Image 1 (spheres, rainbow, N blue to C red):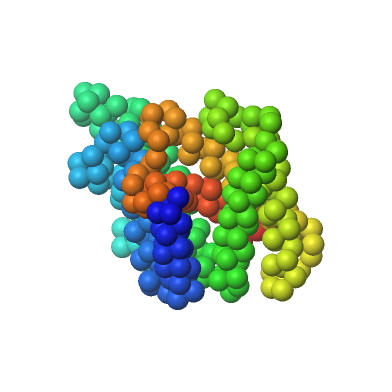
Image 2 (tube, rainbow, N blue to C red):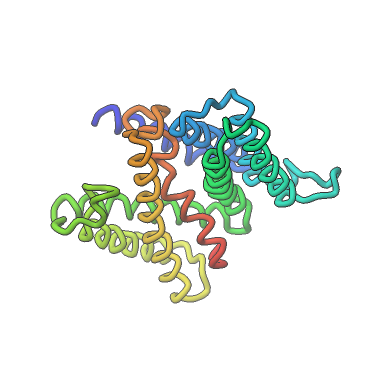
Length: 263
């Protein structure tokens, strides 16, 4: 527990500081986090990062992660999504060229992982550089952390009914509801001092989406770990596991907020 607290304080302070700084240090940090997260997924699948397929999967993820201003393909007269689709075609062709040594299942894993990690972290960068991006990103982080804390303590003291025991045996319905409740309490206090939205309907919807989908994102990563029989995604953060273990909720929340036009 002591190691967990020390890691949380040091890593949390560093992460928040770089969010405040913004600009290229923030972009570089997100690039590093996304790269480590992709490595963790490949390791679960027992695919080496240094292999040609591992490097290609990284490149696929970077295409979706980095803004056009950093990684663009206008010199080839194609956009990022067209390049991504081209590389998917290459991956599928490799299943034939390698005579199924590289399988369709592996290709599917790489494509889905690239979208999961790439788009998830991409919208960190996108949100930070919006007009109110710093306040908005802090609001999202606070809501996710409030949900995690509320779910933990509500589940510990009031939890009786399992939420999804096949995926995450310790999570309870009472815990999930407690997480949403604390997110609303903390969220309303935050918005009272730093108004981000023009009406309360948007505020309530935003808090609900972040809290509910954040918990769903946590379950998605739990399902991944259970499928590949691993306890943690990695050991980058002592006492906390890997990058995916800490960012699973956030990288699931961010694209959903974008699709709902909430960021």
